[in-house]
Image (cartoon, rainbow, N blue to C red; front, side, top):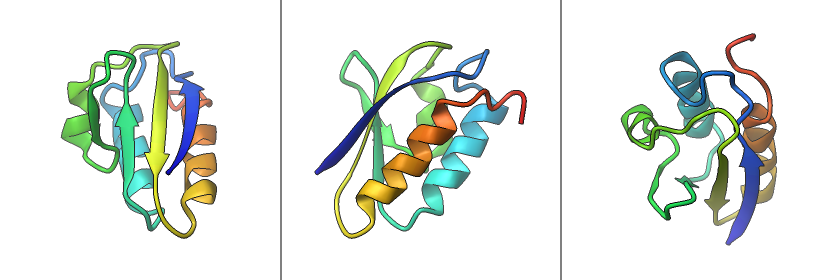
Length: 89
């Protein structure tokens, strides 16, 4: 399993628009990605409702994980996305 830890840079965290952009990107990477918060709760990163249910705020450190071919590249792309302010995109 490949993992990446990243701090969420969006000024409002992963709420509404940023969560939607992230979930859409996660669904398009070609591997199943899990998003986990510090409390240990995990969701499918491609699920907008799952991502929203985590209530991830600005600066929160999350863990992305995936298995399979292309997992490392997929997680690198998603980590880069989370490290940018999606409210400014």
